[in-house]
Amino acid sequence: MQRLLQHGRLDATGRLPHIHSMNGRRTRFFVIAILFIVASCETPIQSRSFPQQTFQHLTPISLDVANIRIVRLFNPPLKEPHIEHEMPVPPIKAIERWITERILAVGASGQAVITIRDASVIETGLKRAGGIRGTFTTDQSERYDARIEVEIRAADGRGIRTAKARTTSSRSRSISEDATLNERRTLWYELTERVMSDFNRTFEMQIRKHLAPFLK
Image (tube, rainbow, N blue to C red; front, side, top):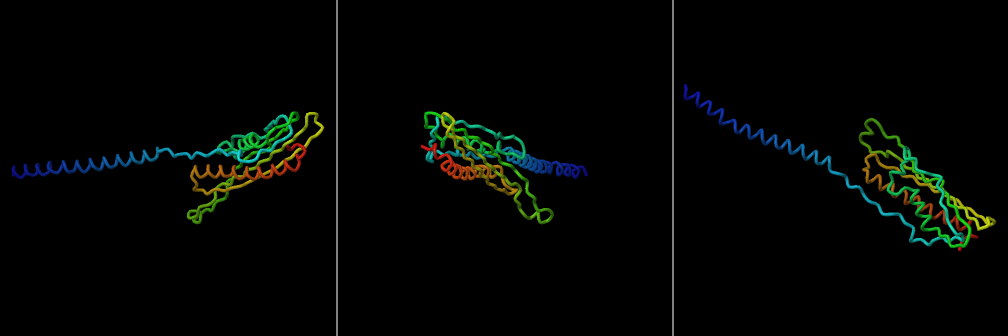
């Protein structure tokens, strides 16, 4: 009886190392899995960088004035529904660069005043499908409306000869509800690029039409 009891103790203690080993492996696996999940969550998303939008490849528009002044009537509000401050290239910056690179003062007197009246981009939430249909569909969640309005006034040194031109350009884009931040920023960049392309074409046409006496 004593021998059987001793044998029973030996069996019990003999199984303990195996149980501890299994529990240890499970614990280590659980800890490693948790660390992997945490590390994945903390991995920073690489933000895409965007090139500058320049206009140096275009022929400058030379005006018979001594200087050019830029007047800002629009300033980004930095709050919803405006999103200009979040964009890689806000329209206001693109317009100012366009003026610097495309409009040249080559005269001895006179002045051209370029007024930026609007350079806004507004975000509007779109209605999405609800219920079961909404579960299985990917909708467009937001629309972005860009609008540019710029005016130029030119006057000679005595204020006798004057001329003005104005243009308005607008573009809209919508984005999917499952878009990533980088995809959203890419859309914003392209939106500025396209509305500026429209602006460049129409404003140059208006300048050549209405400011012809000042062109050199």
